[in-house]
Image (cartoon, one colour):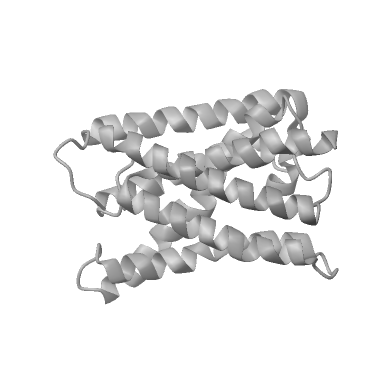
Length: 235
């Protein structure tokens, strides 16, 4: 994590985190009224607003813990602009690559939530994903592995945890896509694609802040799931 004299106070950082959490929860609430079925593959039969609220509350605790241990800032002030810009560029690159894969070996036509619901769904589910696949497992690993390292914020501990955590989302994707049937080469490619995506996200968080890491996923979702998700149905 890069030290800076311009890092905002803890009060401001947690205010930003609260605002992001409320926006994500509001998006879930709006979509739950019109069509909560979009959340069923992720929350099952649990009320989406209740499930998202519990996850977001847990994420708030985990992110405060990680921030207090010096793992990354939540909001780094002016440095956040550089982090968001870098995240947008990297996310665009990942989106271009997966779009090319989709053109070569199309994924299922119904894989994306259609607009206008997608405008609420993807920012919300992206925020939930940051907690489930990043904040929570990082906090747990820090609790488990931290005592084994002399410095809890050491690069060795950080990279060990980042690599382990980066494997979670690819495993989730591959397990949900297989369903007992052989995977296509495009579906197999999703594994390393999502692993590298997660690893770069975590590096961005260490280099800048949580806001930049979330922006990485949000820009990717906008390009891949929302923009291309609609455009691919026109062909």
